[in-house]
Length: 208
Image (cartoon, rainbow, N blue to C red; front, side):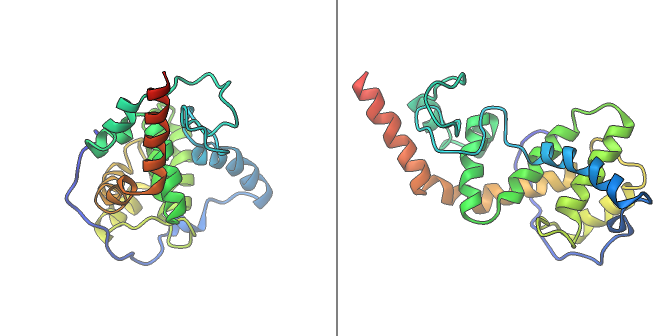
């Protein structure tokens, strides 16, 4: 899926799928298998980790000795041109994710990022394992991080979970991308987080 605007809006959730009950294996073994991969799916982009805001590069590290390239005023200003521009760069995604966290909707970005990682997989066993984790974390109505999807998309996912491909969540990913674009992106553009970053980079540009 290319990052492009969609037309569908989120809708009500159907009853829980049998997939929610998991696969037949011992609880300890299931938990051991699930935790490392779940942590990887929830991890931020390589350009950032959770921590103090480093305004010079927005990489969320604690000092300016990081190895990531510094952001420029032009780059951050480009985020206001389109949602695609914001989502194209790791720094843009991390800044937007931090804003979503303040609105208690970070799961939308986490789901989108997990889908991107899934699409890179070629091994069927890994695809099945990751698809199950994504389902349990973001699709299942039992999950506290459930994303808002319409019933049609959920039904298709439930059917395809028997033999998932790396593109099983494409429609859901597009729907969440559209939701973030229409709902959260305008507020991010007028947020203190974005304005403070612009001001910081503007002052730095004047100093140099």
